[in-house]
Image (tube, rainbow, N blue to C red; front, side):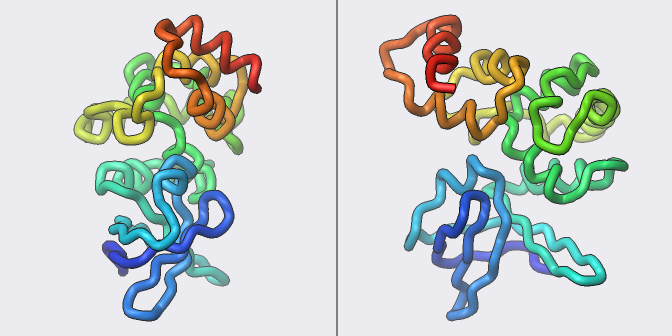
Length: 191
């Protein structure tokens, strides 16, 4: 198994990077917020989960071991494959933590591949994961959200927008917007 890759990044399509390690390029799928943080030609270390099927050998990369561990827990849940698990890792940890604490999956239905029933089951599973591994939810959202307002992200997710669209819209907002309400109103005009 590959634990991590450290090398030069070449960004491909959104969510896809190549990590050049000693002249060998490894294609790695990453959550969209991670892809947005990586730049062409930069050096980075990605913590890797290797996923092997009969016809494929896929690598999934994360900037920290907590996110990798969360991904690995998520893909053990029935109905959650690696693509959906990767989408879940694009959701701010604050939203995942809130779903785990409340046992309510409403906010998770905005994730591609997750319907109402799966979201309800996922919220219960996240609660179980949070009880056993609370460290996965510590500093909820800090690495992914950066300066973004987690409450604004949660409101927009409840309205049905995808995490990628929400993060893009919030990144384009002027800095002088101070309240969650102002940010949500401005983001809705862009969505």
